[in-house]
Image 1 (spheres, rainbow, N blue to C red):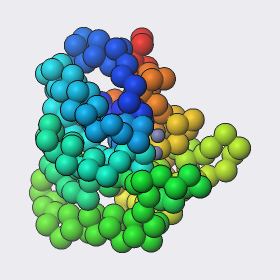
Image 2 (cartoon, rainbow, N blue to C red):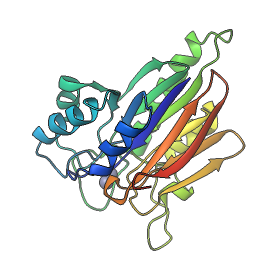
Image 3 (cartoon, protein in one colour):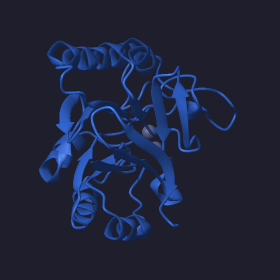
Length: 229
Ligand SMILES: [Zn+2]
Ligand SMILES: [Zn+2]
């Protein structure tokens, strides 16, 4: 059994409730879904990740579009950067892709949506080539940008701003879970088709987090929790 807590969009603001929660609950892994800093400074990454790790948990992170150049190195110095990478963790397989599709704000970590599609497709396809179906794993796609046209990508005006590339890859490979952030006001847990749970915890300062309890390679529970409860 593996317990994973996902948080997102820190933007350089710590939340003491996170450390309290981690000290009071039995979590194995904290996943940070990007926008760790607010356009820097990179020193914050080390401080923040070390404080989380001090709560006796593993930490894996991806960058967001608001993190500056050098972010993957900064993450790798203290933990593991999952950007464009695959890792097995207990009964789960984590596929990571940071940054976001283009925004009107010209932020540092923007990637053309067709490139996101190609890269995420390849990540998920690579795993399919080596997949051993005698050893089932819960497939978790970990992205900063949410998939297009879901609860997780709707901004205040009602417009959807997520990544069509991520949505297409999800349709093609049907991972059981997509964890994402980026759209701060779209804290939600919803579903794409009957196959994929999509969870956006919202901003860390607003106390949102996603809790995943992986029971074995095919069964899990997922919920959005409040760190201040
Ligand atoms: Zn953000
Ligand atoms: Zn973002």
